[in-house]
Amino acid sequence: MQDKSIFGDAKIFVKLFGFSTVFLMSLFVFRPFCKYFCPFGVFLGVFNKISPFRYKVDSSCNKCGMCRKKCKMGIKPYENPNSVECIRCGECINKCMKKSIHK
Ligand code: SF4
Ligand code: SF4
Image (tube, rainbow, N blue to C red; front, side, top):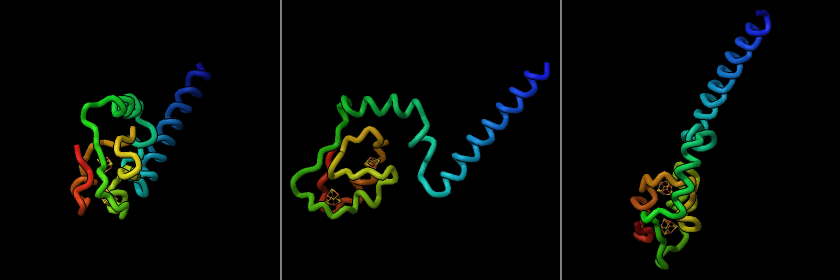
């Protein structure tokens, strides 16, 4: 009976610790749970490699880095336009002055 109570307390502690960690990280990192912990995101990310909706960067790219600055997932689209972490928000496409990124 006593053991069950101890495990119950431990579970609450683990949940509180997990929630607090994600909450604190979210003050500094965009969508920390999606980015670092979500197993479904990992599963979906695998399909970025075989998705028909691929991004391409053409030769007009001058590597100015504007797309990288705007990407909330921390991706460099001009180096890795089909990163498994990409959520296909399209923000990099919108911000590229040279219109170098294509779907
Ligand atoms: S914003 Fe456009 S031109 Fe600049 S690095 Fe990104 S893809 Fe290249
Ligand atoms: S589509 Fe969004 S997440 Fe993907 S590289 Fe562009 S800005 Fe980053």
